[in-house]
Image 1 (spheres, rainbow, N blue to C red):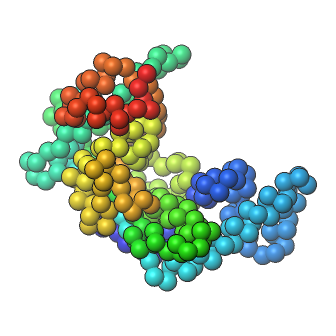
Image 2 (cartoon, rainbow, N blue to C red; image 1 turned 90 degrees about the vertical axis):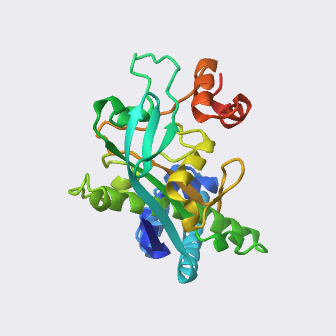
Image 3 (tube, rainbow, N blue to C red; image 1 turned 60 degrees about the vertical axis):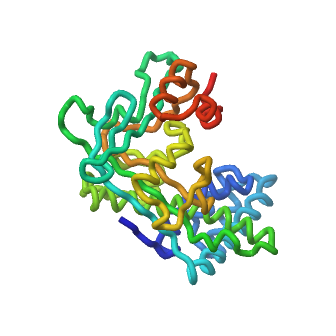
Length: 300
């Protein structure tokens, strides 16, 4: 299912912490996004900072004003699109077996934590949150992708500041649209959380049931699985194409999986050994050289 959003409808879902981080500001400066827009409130906000930090806070305030002006301009001509699909699925060891169409299945290999933990807690894999194939009962998983309008990537190329402003806002808009889409999926399309009643602040700290790991997250680090998600979703429907290495274009795009299990949680796969690398390579049907490239950050 494709959902198209006008920019002003997803702006409330922007996590401004990451926007300000991209501009070199620490998280506390992102609090300007929570302040009423009147001059009195903003002046009062400035006084909460030590004298030596007020110039930096003023810069953050100005950046926020300019970001919102840019969002208003972008809202006239552009939309953000999301795509999702709910599929029957089961786990089979560290693989997901996902039904693409009736009686057509995609095997989606995953990685499991392997570094010993001090507290002795289990080594997690995303497949742990899907009912096993041996149960004989199908479970459900969601796949998703979101992207900005590709034309936004070429805006203001002759103005480095505005170009960077659009780039950093584009990243946030793709994520914000994903947040809004996921809320709709939980409450309506999938409907496992019909009674959910969370404000934006709670959504941004993931107080809802379920998780939404995107490709590149610590629990889903292999960029090459973008090809598997494309097989499930046909991402060109919303203008996303993949390079030969699985990178997405437009760059301000995101894709991943949605899990509903009440115990599902985010985690980091961390470092893996040669044994798991070889096993994962076999399950992915790739060469060991390819997988070393995609998993370089996870290799010991």
